[in-house]
Length: 308
Image (cartoon, rainbow, N blue to C red; front, side):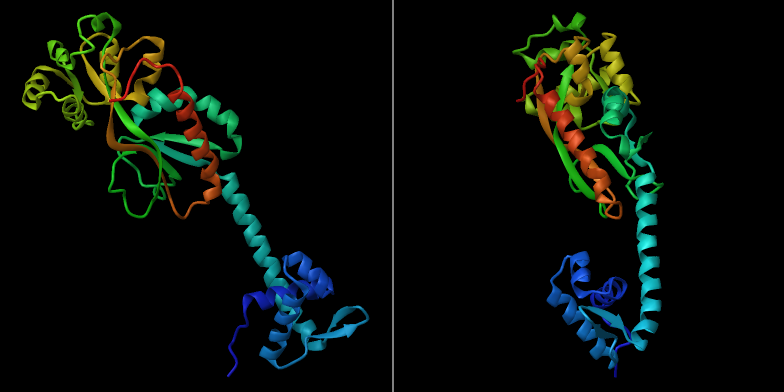
């Protein structure tokens, strides 16, 4: 019993050969050998048990069976090409929606957004702020830029861009109160903290070999904020010592608005770009390259921090 459908490769070879009237021309269009097209045509004729082509000088002409078959196959491939073209046009014409936590957006991405738009105009980037990590593929989000640590969420492709480093930072007006060789002197000031980063201070304190019980007491006497953005502004205003990813305070360290007397420590988290496996990967490749290039160029700048 015959299969109802021959192979797609055989149908492609037939459509090209019938349209172009030549096995050689079909082979060139399909980027295969002359022999490969001939074999596909022969398999197609064996599949149906009829001749579809006849010799016509140096070329080919369709038999009556071939003519009838070509009308349906030609129409099907024309519609398929049209569908592929339309899908590509839709994908390339739609905006690339990037979700990003508000603080990362405000303190790092927005100051670089004009540069990004100039370098990647074809991306048609649209940025949305989200206080919780949005999985790409939902709510029309193409990708999510965020600090996160394993285990990664299921159903997304995770591109690691850079290791997270956290810094204890203060305003220049308070910096003279601390000994850069003695991290414990930070307990002489009010500690600023936020519920969105509860693990940051304990990680920093452990990395410096300080007493966690003393940290707990200091946090009780410190000042809490709902968002990391407010925490950073409080540090700039001289209200105490704050803790934050270096990437988010890099501009402040560079301009002297903040100082990191004790350098930075690396955490298990990473700055990541989460991608939907269903999205066209070509749309995100250049964005990943741009992000890595931007981070690398800033790492080379002479920032007054050191990694422990």
